[in-house]
Every structure is written in C-alpha cells, then in structure tokens.
Image (tube, rainbow, N blue to C red; front, top):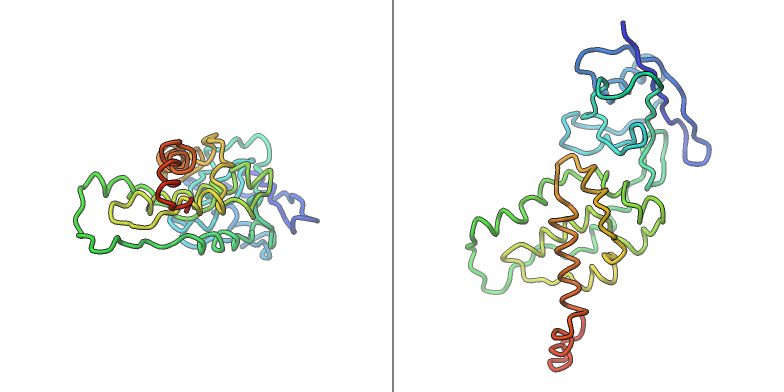
Length: 246
C-alpha cells in the first residue's frame, strides 16, 4: 500500500517542532483523513480542530506545505509525495497546542462592527442586482485563511490596529446593502486600519469560497474612504455643514 510521510507540527509556538508520521494512502483521501489516521493509530494526543469535514465550517484550517488551506478540502493526491508533507498551525495566531490556534481575536474585532441597521422609514424593496452584490460576502465560512495569509497580521502583527480581510468582507456586505443606513467609514479608517492593506490579493487567492475579497470588497471600501476623507469637494461640504469626519 502506498504511504505518505506527514511532518506535523507538535507543541506550542515556543517549543513546537515537526514530528514525522507514515500514513497509508486511500483513494479520495484528504489531509484531514491523514490527521485522523494519526490520531487513531499513531498519536492519540494530536490536537486538531475540525467539525463538519465538508468545507462548510472553516474550523480545520492549517498550513499545508506552507500554504493556508482547509485540510478537509486538500486531497492527498494533489500534493507531492516525494518529500514529507508539512502540516503546521496558522501562523498569524497564537498556538494553543499542535495544530489548534487561538482565533478568539477575530471575534473581538467582529464586535466592533455595527450590525445591519435599516434606514428610518425604509421600504423593504430592492433590485436583484442590489441583492447580488453583497450576497457574495455572505459565503464566508470564517476559516480565517485570509487573515492568516495577510502580511499585515502574519508578518507585522498589527492585530491591535487592523481588522483583516475577513472583516473588510463583513463591512462591505453591510455597507453595500441597499437598505442599510449606518456609515462605517470612520471605523474602517481609525480602528480597522483599512489603509494598511496594499491589495496584494493574497487573501483572495486562499479563499475556499472564491470570494473576490480584494476586487469586490477591499478596493470599493478604500474608494469610499478616499471619497469621504480626502476628496476636496467632500472636505468643503463637511466644513460648511460641520458634519466632521464620522
């Protein structure tokens, strides 16, 4: 029977290191299957977060050969087997144990975003095209692969000043809703650090739901910030009406 060698990260961020395991291959096998084999036969104390095994919950995120992926959607036969397959935890977040990371920071960011608030007296009617635009962002499964691959978080650790692609997607879904009446421009500029994003599109590349994060969410939000805070005509209007920058 064909085998694959998995070099799985074990331990915490300070003392962790890869440990190699030989796993027999089966048709249709995915990386999460291989991790379950290790748990069941070789190392029952291996910590792995997962839930649905169907690419819908986003909880089995890890780095496979250095690329952030869902382990339940990464087929073993799509990976080179000549050398060990490295499985490591998401690099942008603290490691709890082995492949399990502490992603609770994301939920704290989520709390900062005002919920959908319809305009006073709004009529609950809209065109289909206005529904389709924010609907794309509702596909997000919160796997946080986009957060992990974003260099602002991954390499520079600006968690305190930055929201990350996942929450720019959420804000875009709200801001582009035809019936929403709340402006989140000040939040994007001052607390979520939208300006740190330099639109490398790495978040879009790893999204398992194929959301066009950069083109359809981040760039339009950047345009709104520029219009509101840096367009000279808007600046004059704010000075005359004394509306400020909120």
